[in-house]
View: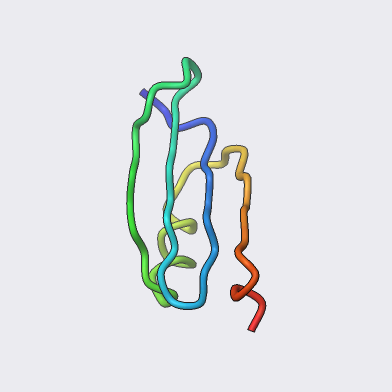
Amino acid sequence: MKITTVGLDLAKNVFQVHGVDEHGRAMLRKQLKRDQVAPFFARLEPCLIGIEACGGAHY
């Protein structure tokens, strides 16, 4: 199955990624460090991405 939607929870150092398929079934649950985020999304096929940020994510 292909991941169609990804939710990304931003933080200072650790990011949570949750991906679902077209039926809403969880296909991916991953914890990424700051330096792993860009390479991870570079390898991911195009999809819808929703971003949630906590108050401390903006430093």
